[in-house]
Amino acid sequence: MLSVPTLVSLLLLAVPNAVYASPCVSFDADFNLLAFGFNGKDWNAGQQDSWTSGSATDITTSGRPPFDGTNTTCYFAQFFNAVYFINADKSKPSDVHIYDAGAKSWSTQATNLNNFDPASFNTILDHDTNVFYALSHNEVYFLDMGSLKSANATALDWTDVQKSPFPDSYQPVMALAQNHVHFLDVPDVDAGSADIFVIHFSFFQPQPQSYPLSDGSAFPKTHGQTASFFQAQGVQQEFAFIPDDGAMTYVINVETNTTKTIAGPSTKDPNAQYSASITALVQLDSKGDVSFIPYKQGDDSANAAAAWSAVQKIAAVAPASSTASSGSAGASGTSGSASATGARQSGTNTAAAAANPSKTAGTNGAMTNAISFGGVASALMAVAALMQ
Image (cartoon, rainbow, N blue to C red; front, side, top):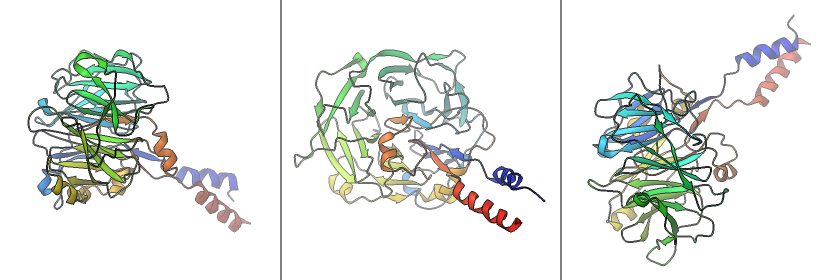
């Protein structure tokens, strides 16, 4: 007869390991919605007018990363029709993976970290210079991607620019517009205002900039996520700010120094990530569901009436349950999705964790197969009772 310890060992062997998948969404130059790391594959959901029906096209090919990193992020380089990925391969956290959307091919770019921490950072990809600007452990770093659509043989350097003026406790909320990095929720900066880092001159403006709503109110001073709306030509002029509570979406216009509001996402998820095209804001929640809200720049009435809808083309081929639990299908490569637009945060979102203690995935990931050891223990006790 088997002993209880032997049964425990067998049952524990039968329990599946927790599986982490870290998908991301971005765009190509035609603003087709691209979904990476979903159900172990990559997908093209087409343009916005087709998202609510049909099925996405499988674009999985060799050389892709496994999308098993913590908080994979991806960033759309509009000039080069390429998507850059950080933290898509947990075994090679210093690598940046490149998807050439025109050639539909992958390559892997080596980098020298130089104290940049890929486990704890927030970054934007500047539109005009194609340079990453990141905040990691309160140091400002840059990584110059040049005109890369595919990797070169020489490792690129993460370069330490300077120490930021923020306290070490600051959890960065970063957004890109007009070649400036906007920092929200900064200590000692009022609600509705941002500290600004001027990219082309590499310095912090001495005073914050305010972006009031028309009624004189302000977007809240709180942690959240951002995504910058592209233009058909030129740099981004607006970015969306989605506080962790998801109650409202704030659109900040840095040309007029004003803020408008549109509906908050249907799924209130502080661990969601966001991307934007010219005419849509897209949410990827931590379960793997993808939804969007239409956005028409300059049309307040249309934006006020807009509502969030599911991207059915992705759900049809990669339901959220399978997306969250899947890893990679024959993958080889690295990293993720501050996608078409704003900033993405890697590392633990402690504010979000406090608000949602049941979520153990990072800011940009999806996790399933969490094991209930209480359930396992109950099963073991039942088996032991039968053996008496």
